[in-house]
Image (cartoon, rainbow, N blue to C red; front, top):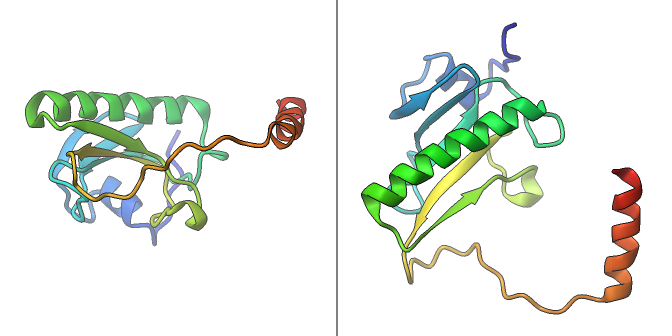
Length: 141
């Protein structure tokens, strides 16, 4: 069964071979390639071959495959580049910083003091609010 595509999507064009990339690996459901606007050296992307914009619409087996591809790339990043850490980032929607509406996971090598602002300082939450949201989500699951 063919993957859904969007002719205006840059990642669909990369999957189709219409735009070149530094391809790291490829299987039937995913492709991984270097990010050409890297936050740090070694920044790569694991991308679903089909055009599903966000986590809420992608089939479970495909997002699982994207995660497996991201893990393979992350292992190579750790062994070859020896960063201080690696972030796996998967954003959904503009409010979360998603710039290409095609599901992908960033594999981002991190170095101490690299000034990449992804981290936050944990602070205690309101237990009543947490419980109310928990009940709403639990009922939906």
